[in-house]
Image (cartoon, rainbow, N blue to C red; front, top):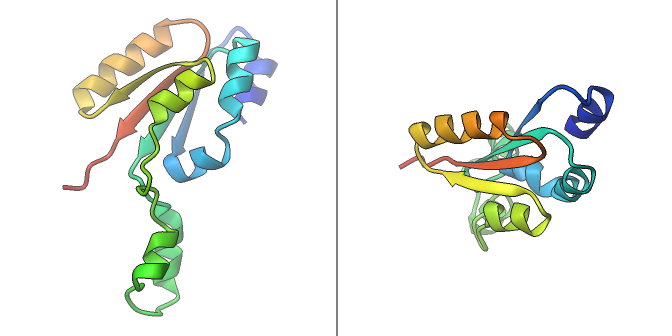
Length: 125
């Protein structure tokens, strides 16, 4: 959707907010953003899990998932290196581990033309 919005309104900044599970399904869109030099800031909130699938699994009331089922909703083995992936597709990218880092990165990304990528690392610990 972000690509469509950027093509439809080339003079406006587009901000795309994504979980890492959904981001894994649409990774190739970064290449399009870079090739077309679209003015999109992509933020991936990296919690290293398909959290929505985990929630849906809990809604089945089947109990605590066993090791095999738990592996199906985890994105940490191997853990995706979002910054390297984005850069590999030609998009400027940074990783943020604090809200202060994120605030600065977002401000810089909004002020910069062309595609920008921010990995916002979520740590539940």
